[in-house]
Structure formats: C-alpha cells, structure tokens
Length: 373
Image (cartoon, rainbow, N blue to C red):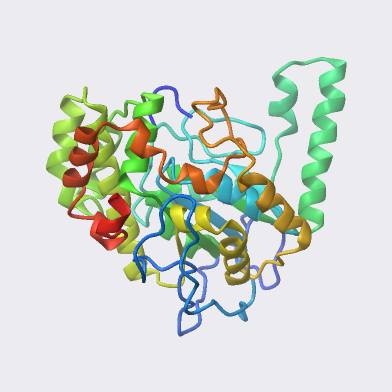
C-alpha cells in the first residue's frame, strides 16, 4: 500500500474508564490450533482443483467470546473479503481500516500519519484512548454534520448516530478489517482482548497485485520507526534503509514488503499460537468449508445466510480477474478458485524468478515448491 494514495459495548467487570474494555486478554491452555495449516500437508492444489480434505477439523470454540475480532495480514491478502464475510455473522460491526493514515470517517477516532505503525508498550499511551473509542463503536455526529452543514445533513447525521448507538445498545462487537494494523496486532489483541485472523498470501500473487496497481511504497514510514527496525524487522533493516533511499523497482519493493510482512506473521505464529493463520489460497479453493471452520474457531454461527454470502462472493460464475474486467476499484465478487493463479498471467517468468529468489528466506515457512507451479 503506497504512502500517498492507496487504498462494544460494556462488559461485566470493567476495570477501565475508557469506553472500551482494555483488560489484557486471558487465553486458556492449550491454544486452539490455526484454521488452516501454515504448510500444506499434501502437494498444493492448482487453480480449479479441490484442496486436500482437512485431516483435523477444528472443534467448536468453547471459551467465552473475545471483545472483538481483528482481521489483518499483508495488504492484498484477502483481508477485505474475509472481513466482509465474517461480518455476516450476528453480533458484529464492521470497521474499515482505522489505522489508515489520513482516514477520517465519523466512526474512526484514530489519527495516524505513518503507514503500518508499530504500537507497543513504548508508545501505547498516545493511542490507547482513540483506539478504545473506535472499538467502542462511538460515532461523531459533529464530524459527520461538519462535512456538509445543512438541514438534510442534520437529519442524516442524526440517523447515522442513532444507528451506531443501536450497535452499542445491542452489544455488537467490533470486527476490524485492517492490514495496516499488522505491526500493532499483538498490542491490539492483548490490550483489547481481540481474536486475530492473520491472512497469508503467495508472494507472487502479492507482487502481481502490487505491479497491477503500481503501488509504490515509501519505506521511510518503516525506517523512521526505531522500535520496529530494532525489533520485529531487524533482519531487514539494511534492505529497508536502502529501499527508503531509492525505490524505483516495484518487483523488488513487493518482495521486500512480502518478506517483512510474512516474517512478522511467522513470529506471531510462534508467539501467539491461538490466533488463526489462514492462507488466502486455501480459503479460495474451499470457501464454504474454510469459512465454516473459521467461524467455528471464532465462536460465530455459520448460518445458511452466511453460507449463501460466502458462496455468492466466490462462486465460479463471478469474474475471474476483477482488474482485467475493469472492476479493480473496491471489493467485488470473484471466482476465488480461478483467482488463485492469476499471478502466472500478470508476471513475466523473470519476475516470478525474482520474487521466488527474493523471498526465499521466508516463503518455505508457508508454501511448498508445488505452489510455484
């Protein structure tokens, strides 16, 4: 995602005066396994093929529900699709990318100027209250009305404010769709008791999407975050510094971004095994089954209406490539199985080789050699 133009209610036993419960979450042992295997148990299915049967279907969740859900991962990894489909469940309220810089809808109280901000104990105090208000489903009537002060806007602003008040009164939980919050995910999960779904996508698919959209990223957004460079992204500090000084290679940029994002996800899988780690390809090849398991892991009811929404979003009758069909703006229904291998048409053989070699220190943790065929 480029640096320029790119794309709760009350709880019993509250211990904080903030409008959202900020108690650290308490996780039972043993941890619930991920919905999708991080490494395929059998040769990877090709586009249009059926994925291997799940050898160990995940049991229904038995612990109490978390205060909300965060869907994150790298951008271009299916977080919007997953967020929208999970939001079909009862009792959730969809929040779109509150960590996005210069993003100021009336339901977002956070104000960031850095893409992929790293948040932890060292800087949490400056963000906690705004995040709590956002997760608490607060809505700014004044900000909405100020967009176009008029009698009509007065009515519309009041109507929207009442809707969001209704979300709170009905006890709806926030479902945050935000890949930009990836480096803040541990803090968000622990401080606000959120379940986390971390999306994983093939490096060539990610690179092909960056190439298609021509999204140049300013790596100075990472270089200037001292704690991030000294900690989570320390293995890539030199590469980030060089790319921040000169970035005119979209394929090289995409490879470095993918390595950083998925290195972080690899670390989270080790330190937060109770999170759900889902490969975009596995979900695309078996949407109904994959979402059924994901719903169960998150303690959500996968109703017939939810299944219909999943099938409508992914069936073979949809477009196979939204960009090629001229529908690249926003989220559209696609043929999810056919979409898996679109990178083979978008990238040249040399670009595929560069991405494979340039991400080789990370991709074997998530993919096999067959996934490159």
